[in-house]
Each structure stands twice: as structure tokens, then as C-alpha cells.
Length: 277
Image 1 (cartoon, rainbow, N blue to C red):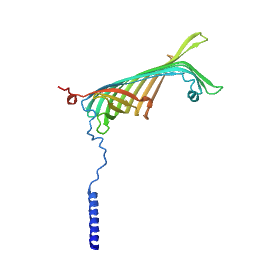
Image 2 (cartoon, helix red, strand yellow; image 1 turned 90 degrees about the vertical axis):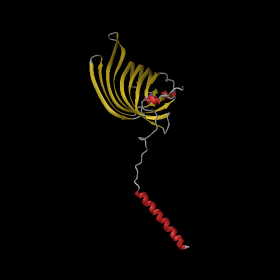
Image 3 (tube, one colour; image 1 turned 180 degrees about the vertical axis):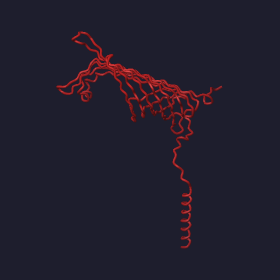
Image 4 (tube, rainbow, N blue to C red; image 1 turned 60 degrees about the vertical axis):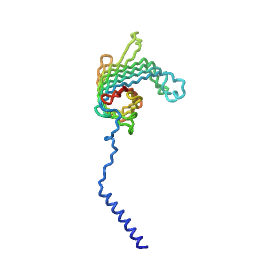
């Protein structure tokens, strides 16, 4: 009985050693998530896309003077009255050269207006500043070439995330001026600065896309990573001239720059839905 037990233990040990040796001989394959080899098609090749994203904001300052929280946070700011409006619209078109991969073009128009009627800044009982009748306006036109790659959630054909590479260039104009009254000359005056703005940017824009029908999708995106260059030429009171150049790289999420858009994707060729005969 003892011999049988010993032989059984030896055979089991030998089997374990042979299995371990077999595992050691097998080549170890590198770990791959299979993202680049995904066979899930979210938007097929040959699809034509078009859409528009937009934003609008309107603010009115000076209505929170009776609010306790406003008084605690902005106790140094008094007699704050003004308004600000911003508007932006960006149409875009694209063509899918491969499944889930598109190239396209995009145009952006943005406009911002700020009117500051009055602002008193009380730093102490003996030191205070006052600004009034100040106006600022800026508008910009930019164009971009885009390359967008979609990564669907699993095998979903309704939800996906995307990453868009943008090469952007544009031109803008800005004007800031202040109006007042000269008591010596007894006449009104206007002093200000006019700017020409040239800009260039290479940016990476992540986002999410959700189809509500076969051809219509809602999209949300936010600028995240980019290299930007800007040159500003300005003239003050039509006499003084100056220039400024700046460039930099940013890697941050700007929650105030979230864009919502509506896009249409029209399949072509064999992927087009056929009406029932």
C-alpha cells in the first residue's frame, strides 16, 4: 500500500514538472488591448459628414448686490454694473477615408462684447480705484484641417469616443475704448486701442458622440492639448504702435470651452440604407 502511494506521488510530481517545462518553452506573447485591430465599425468608410457646433452666453452684472454670498466674496467690489455677451458658431464637413477615420475642414466664427458701465475697487479706506464707460469687442475667424478617429464602446454602434487632431490658423480683430468728458475742453472724448490678431494652433480635441438616429448624432468635445502661437499688432489712439508675440503648450481641461454640436452622417455606396420596394 505504501509503495502504491509513493508511486502515485512520483507520477503527479513528474506530471507537474513536465507541464511547467512545456509552459517555459511556449513563447510569451506581448499584451495587446487590440484597439488598433478592432473590427467594430462605428462609421463606415465613404460616409460624408456635416454639422455645426454653437455657443451663446449673455451675462448681466450688478444684480447680486443684495445677495449675502456676493457681498462676502466680492466685498472689495462696489457699484459693479455691466454686461457681457459671447457668441460662436462652427460649421464643419468630413469624409471617412477608412472605417472610423475621417478627414475634414472646419470654420469658426467667435464674437465677444463687454460693456462696463462702472466698477469701484476699494482696497482700503484710503485706496480705491474706479473704472467706468469701458467697452471691449473682439471677433475672430479661423479655419482648420481635421483628422478624427472614433473608438466605439465595445461593439456599440450608437456610442463612441473620438480624438480629433486640428491644424488651425486664423485672424481676429479687437477694440477696447473708453468714453468720457473733458472738463477743461468741455467736450467728450474717446480713447482706445485697436488690435490685429494672427494665430496658429495644433490641438488635440477629445469628445463623445451619440447617435439619436441612423444619420444624426449629438457630440460634445473639449480642447485639451495644444501648441499655440499668436501675434498681436495694436495701435493706441491712432498714434502709438506696438507688437506682441507669444507661444506655448497647454495640457489642461477648460470647462468653459466645452462645445456641443449636431452632426449628420450620410453613408454612401453599399452602406446607404435602401428603401423597401
